[in-house]
Image (cartoon, rainbow, N blue to C red; front, side, top):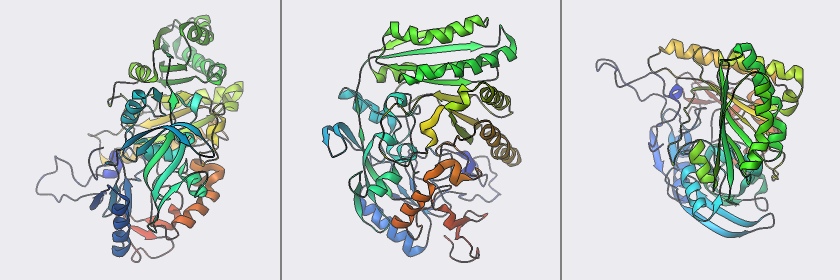
Length: 493
């Protein structure tokens, strides 16, 4: 996070060198940038754009490096490192034609735990994910940004009021629903690193208050594995009433246990929380399963997050190198036949070698108001969101890691896709080689997004894997970029 060129995902560092490489063997930089500008102003960004264009080198935007897709690195390139744009401004009364109320202006490098602390200091809550070190004005909000509070307030992108950016032609702009509205629309959910370089984001904040939370665990010890998975399917079918009231579940599924780490019930007291959870408890007990339930009532959202996710800038979420995901439509879960197919797919994924627990979230985004933006339409119809993540083994061979990667792309993702028709893949938690990525990651928005890309970056100077307009380039085996449909010996970056 605090390194100007290093990235979160080991896959994109490759095996060119490690601390254990013998000194007699060559040690290369690998798939990392060669140049970095520690951005502190719009002028720094302009200088970087000019340098990259003049010297015909790849241009990369990096914030914290929380990136599964290789978007924040590129061999031999120049990185615009926005991590130190970390100013925070509380706006008690933001006023525009589309919103009036409290807001925060966050520099592009502000991390989630910093934003949450600043919001807490003024009696507010702000949308963040479960990883507290993510830069929320970066890929988080630009890609959508789900949260344990999304059932009440929508996605991170839904809360953005305006973006401060530098475009590739050097203009310093503010994009909002009333000015440069097409750019605002694209940046709010259409993916990072491709439309413009974001310097700051202004987002809504919400009055803080009571949050009831709960942890809930059940396993297969009393009913066997088949009985456990029947209970998982039933658990999912009971979620609509819970999430339709603005609540959410964040939970992990293994082949033998389901653990809800955070049942989030904003504005609900202990009596109300027990009533909301009672249908789940009754169903489990009727199946002969004795669940472990612990209820916590927090004074505010920060206390709730600390209790259920982790303190401050720590958290506990592991990264998954070979990631994939699925927004699972409500109609899949509420239909008994399709829910059984989904349950079997999750069971198969939980048994896969080299794959960890399946993180899922249950939520209803239709309840929360949202502006017109480029968030994947499948989010609005989703009842569940799940990630299937394979782990990187530092002691594994390059061949074994390649096998795991191939399995993620060609077996795991197609399996969950087939079980969830009309769903979609979250562009921030996906695999860079996902099939049919324009449709899966962007849905019906892709054509309009491509128009915005061509308007603001007609030469496709900004490139990121699976980003809008990335078809203009082909990445060679040595990671150099070459114009599509041209010889690899010409026009390379």
